[in-house]
Length: 213
Image (cartoon, rainbow, N blue to C red; front, side, top):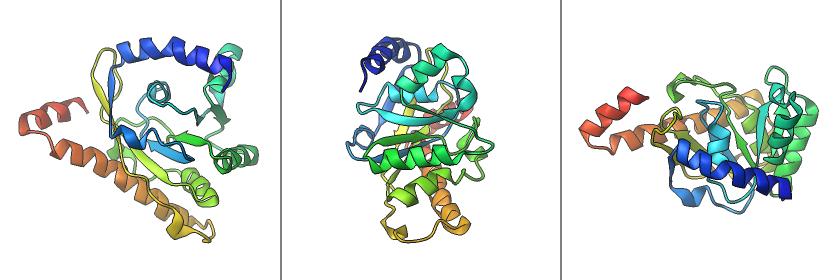
């Protein structure tokens, strides 16, 4: 990892942890050393920065290509592992780059909803790019969920689920049906993560939390 990466990480670490205090539930599944795709709901532009402040291993993240237009911002994003992607039309080069990174044992952070949503319940379907990357590289997908939209000085949680093994799909062609099946499975796990956590809380805490999400 480059010196510039560590410089950016150190500079961002304390402000992010103080201004947007977030606890990770089930940390062990976030700190794996092997290749992995982390699929998370997308509630704010801060999501990737907050997530990466909790990761020990550098991960690459697909980011909206327009964010790279500013040279300084673009340089910082690239140092943090940002890969520019046009959400309207994902280029072949982006797909090849992402697949190569996974095949080289790197990790990928992806927001498969494709855009920011106020709730995971609003995500009727996930974009199939995540499923394609997983299928092509036989990489497990770890579902994650921000419990609430990140806000200044508001305590939040990131719920990390169990990795979804792709070995059952090994050798299958990336048809629309197969990719949709994988995406639906990930979406269900993301929704279950959130719902199971809320259900585990006492009724008063449930009611309070539901007003915030």
